[in-house]
Image 1 (spheres, one colour):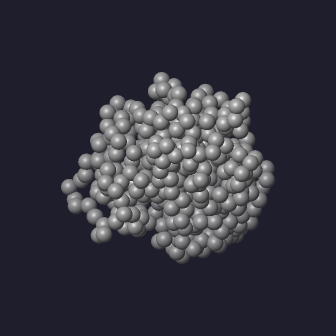
Image 2 (cartoon, one colour):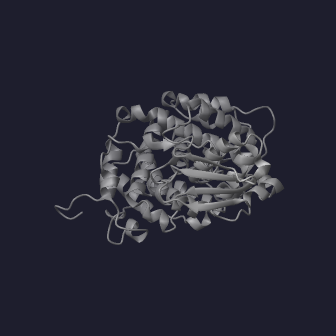
Image 3 (cartoon, rainbow, N blue to C red):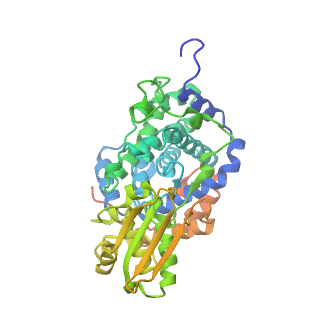
Length: 457
C-alpha cells in the first residue's frame, strides 16, 4: 500500500475478521447453529447421491492424510477433499439456506471447509462458530456489493462469493494476522468461478465445492506466506469489475460488527429454488379452496418478477430442471399438496398426471411483485377463477422455520439420503457446539448397526 493510501477492501474486511472475539459474535451463535444444522440436513439428504459418490471416486486416489469426515458416509478424505465433497452434498438438493438479499446459499461453501479444517487441526466448537459467522458475513457483504448485476451477468453468486467466505473463515481458524487474512481474501479472488448456465446440471455443485476447497486453499497459501494484490476485489482490473460493475463498498464495509448477515439467513421448507417457494405456497392455498377439483382445472397462470421468470420458465427434462421450474412447482403443489424431495425426483418428473398439469401452467411477468413473491390464478373449465397471492413464503424472514422445523428437516433428509448416521446425535451436538472442545462427536456421529456402503476405489 502506498503511503497515505486508504486500506483496500480486503484489508478492511481482514482487520474486522482478525479483531472479532467470541463475545462479539455470541449473540449470533444460535442463528449460526441453525444454519449449520440445516447444512447437515441437506448434506445427509444427498450422502449417497451418484454425484457425491462420483466426486469421492475422483478425489480419493489423489488425496493426502484422511483427516476429515464425509457427512453421512464412512469414507474420509484430506481436508481439501472433504471440503469439496461436503459442499457439493449440502448444495445438491437445492434445499440449503438462503441469504435473500443476494440469493447466496451461505453455509455450503463456508461450513464445509471450516468443519474439515477443524477436524484436521483440532479446533473447538467456539472457534468453528466464530469462523463460520465471520465467513458468512464476508461472503454476503461481498455479494451485497455486486448484487444484482453480478448474478444477472450469469455468475453463480454462491460459488463466486462463497470462496471469499471460505477463505476468511479458514484464515481466521488458522490464526492468521490481519495481513494474512487479507492475502487469503485476495488469493480467493483469483479462484472465484461458477456460472448460472450450469444450474440445471451437477456442474453447479462442482463450483460450490470449488468455492469451499479453493477458499481453504487460499487460507493455507496465505499461511505459507503467499501474498495478493491489496485491491484484488475492487481494483481497476480486480474481481468485482472483471465480473460485474463497480462494487458498492458502502454495502460491503458499512456497519461491520453491528449488522450481521447471518441474521438475514433463511431456511427452505421445499427443495427448490427460493424464488419458487411463494408459488408453492400459493398453490397449496388454491388446492385447499379447490376441494378436490384439480381435474377441473383448465389453465394456471403464475405471475411474478423478472427473476422468477428468468429462473423458472423452462422445459422440465430432469429433476434438476424440476427444482427450478415454475411449472413443476405449481403442478406438484396443486395435484399432490406436497413439495418434498420425492416430488422433485426423476419419478415425479415423468409421472403422467404431473406432466399433464405442468402443460397447463403459463408464466407471466408482473413487475409490481417483488422477488420472492407470486400470484397464481387458476381457471376452471366451468369459467370460475381462483386467485392467491403470497408476498412472504414460508421459510422467509417474515415466516421463518422454527428450530423444531429444522430438526424435523434433518430427520427427513437422513431417511431420504440413506445415511446410517445418528440424526439425534448430530442435532444434539450442533445445539451444544459452543461447548465442544473438539468435533469428533459431531463429525463421527454414532452409526446404526447395519453395514454402510463403502465405495469401491
